[in-house]
Image (tube, rainbow, N blue to C red; front, side, top):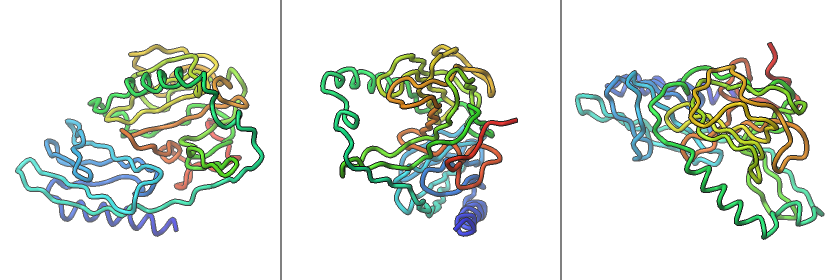
Length: 284
């Protein structure tokens, strides 16, 4: 299966380099939950499935494939001279861990009615804190683990409580003691720093450019403020169990625009399939 996905990636790169006059290359596995980094000729225009994407002055752009993305996508590249070439991308599926649990008290599954007004306000706040087209290239570098610990939850898993499917797990959980350091996984700008969200508890958004945003949740302490530029490895707060968490851990989620992507696939030294439960991460 890994070889097949690798061949898909190589095929996409060769197709881009040979057919598109803008000499487009793609870095990253083309599969559900992945973030792919593109490079094209400066001044070229890029669109995915008909939607224009930002391209940096150096020709870099990002593409994210959601957990449930369909099997195909179309990438169009228009060279500065005006000629447009298209690439048909085959998006490989991934296998997700689905757990079915019965006999759970409803109060532990669904928020109480009195919390709904607060939840709606916080949804609006989070949406307003996610700019789409920040013209930076920080997303294109190598990421590091934002905390040291053991992987206790993986991207894409899903639980079905009492026969009712809940939202998939859109991130990676790193189990660590309350107070353990959390650092920036890559350079970026802090877009949100809220200590008490209903679901997430202490929550920080770090904007890495072009709609790629890291989301750090359940933090016991936040050491950065909105608008601050942080560097990779800079402390931004501490692990906790705030919000809807049953134990101390860091939930690291990531989005590209409206697509939820797997941040573990971006960290150097992690297997191509991402982290698995029980894996120790963040060590020296």
